[in-house]
Amino acid sequence: MAQVKIYGLKSSLGKNKESLSRAIHESLMDVFGLPESKRFHRYILLDDNDFTYPPDRSDKYTIIELSIFEGRSVKAKKQLIYLMFSKIEAYTSIDEQDVEITIFETPMSNWGIRGMTGDELTLNYKVNP
Image (cartoon, rainbow, N blue to C red; front, side):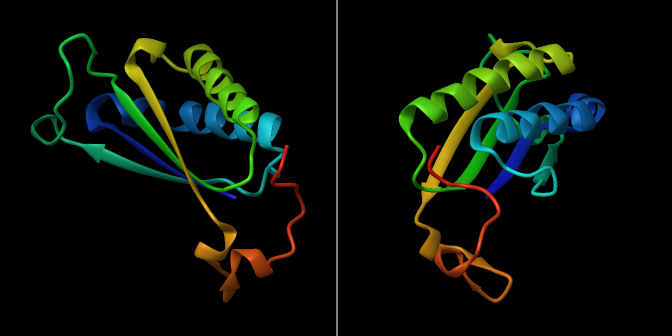
């Protein structure tokens, strides 16, 4: 499971939503083995006066936060981050300088999904690659 929040300026992120979603989800499928159907992406499109960022970033500056089940190796998480940078740059007009990615891990028991806790779910993918 991965819940993804994507923050950026409405004026530039809006143009890249589909390509960005593709880059992120392909990376999650390739590295974590998530199924195609497990795409949970939310866009937080901000007005210029609602998003402050450093002067060495452009108006395409994008923050990506992933909430995932805990249990993946450091190697797998690093592989995911590097692949996301690569695919985002290939599929969108967003340079890697303008992307920041944060992974938040929580125990499966801290998730509530389809009327039960995450540790009670039967998954069609492994959490420990």
